[in-house]
Image 1 (tube, helix red, strand yellow):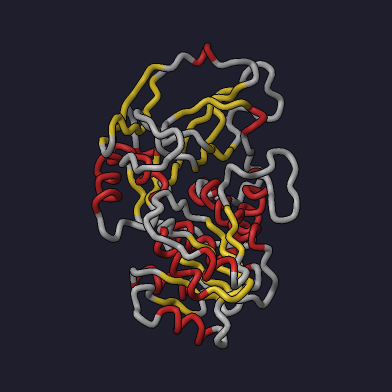
Image 2: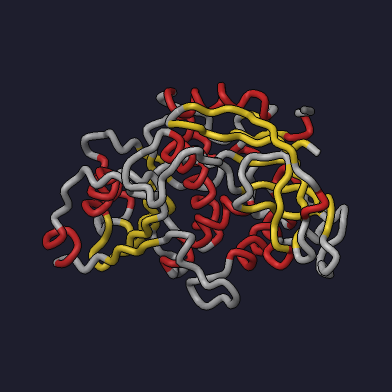
Length: 338
């Protein structure tokens, strides 16, 4: 059978390729998964596709994509937890028509009310869930979500569910600020404003925000956050600050005011058992799907485009070059036939 996949063969050079796969090579403890939807994580995938510096293990060819949903197409002879036809999350599998995984690592979707289009966001949603959990928010604390890309909009909803008040967001794009206000933000600010830090302090009674979720991954944004976070505040580093191009005065801005910087990288999770502030990926997937089922979280407003994988080259060219790229792009593998 043929398998199709998106690949960056060199920096900025993205294509949709096909390869042969023999189902007879499926091992007894593996499952073959058929992709239905895969979601582009724009910031991360752009950084790797252009070969941005400071990416550990950067190499080409690079296979983007890690948040998807679909079905079990076939199960190995020793697999007991899954069967052909089961609906599942597909994580770290790339943007591809099919992928092979160890059966014990695959999360089965048991709630038939969950649409696979929504479920495809589960792995991406697990990142902001981690970033918010690491802050250990208390009801009534003020929070700033810095950046309203796809992760920032999700973090906004999680912070609202956690009782953040006032809940502030910042982004350069007025359309993204408007969306944030619709999804629960109390105040949406432009970080380019000369009096931005003063606006934050005014909204928090002069104290600054108790907690910041820094989503942009831009060092200058982290430096800016240190100017409006409260004394003894916390900053969760959800975005990947790959380029250290802004000098930070750690003595004046971190040490003296007692600010806590928290690394919130998804690789630093327990694998088997959740604990306070640190949940496993599967427990966070379960949380997201439950929130979806009861209508407490939305991902449809994040979707700018649903496209065929055949348009992969065009999509990534726009992500690389556009000043304000689309918020959320989903590949619909049902639209594609090789």
